[in-house]
Image 1 (tube, rainbow, N blue to C red):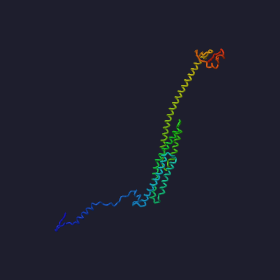
Image 2 (tube, rainbow, N blue to C red):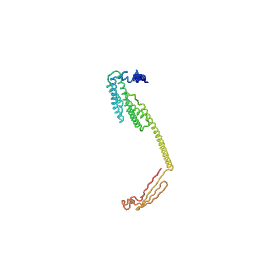
Image 3 (spheres, rainbow, N blue to C red):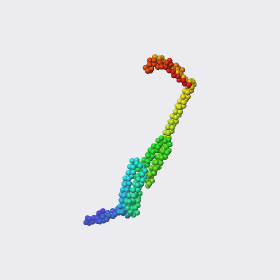
Image 4 (cartoon, helix red, strand yellow):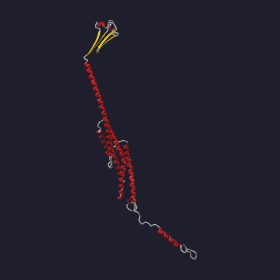
Amino acid sequence: FFFQSATGGPSISMKLLAVFIAAAAAFSAPRSQTRSSPAPRSVLALRGGGGEPSEAMLQATFACNRLYASCLAEANAEVAMLRKTVAAGEDLSGFGAKADAVLADAEDKFSAGTPAGDADVAQLYADKKEELSEAVLTSIEPAFVKALAALKETALESFKAQAVGQDDLANAASAAEAAFVKGAKVCVPAKAGWGYKAERASLVAVIDAIKSQSKKASAVKQQAQQQMSTAMNYLQLQSQQMQQIQAQYAGGQGGKWSLGAAYRPPDTNINLSGSYQQGRANLQLSMVPDEGAALLGPNGFTNGVGPANLGLSMNVHL
């Protein structure tokens, strides 16, 4: 509302209006907070208290992370060489020692780069060193698993080679399992809590399956051999019986005899021969030239022998 004076101007001055507006603005303005929210504990740990972080602590954290990354990269390069060794099928007897050397080298390098400082800095580097060890072991673990798989395969091949031609596979199974255990023990890093029970159980299960199949095959083979032996014994018995029957038949007929004779008349090509065998008589007349006539003269062989120009053969079976 405006009140005009006699001169026509406003009755309330502009100063009163300004005071009213300022009072309203002051009443509606939010109250300022006098308390600040507490900082997170992780921030307080880096700051060393509730105040602002110290420059020395920030530099120590940055240096610790850089040292961690450098040591881990060098360790991973050495782990890559271990993986190549396993993939190439080389000797795995030194795998565990090499893994321990990689881990120890990484820890030694980290310890060598750890500066001497207060308790907070020392704790920071100690926690990071433990994290480094776990990271290196995590990188080695896949190579360790492949090494166990390679040892298992080698043990199986050795078992199969020893099982050829053997009926009892117990010795071959024990030798294969012992070879796997011996190789697996030296593959486990000293600072790792790893084991090989699952792989060993898997190896034993496969060997038992092979043994079971081998026993079945041996049983079938033995049964076939027994059937073959029975058939051979039957044939031999039949042969013996046939021989006995033939012997009895030949002995029951008594003695057997046979007779044969041949005669050639002098100065002729006539050859007369006769035979008697097993109750049968056979007479044969043939014209056969005398091959020795040219050598014996005109009278041939009969001139020298005389009237006994006769060939005679006789066989008697008793």
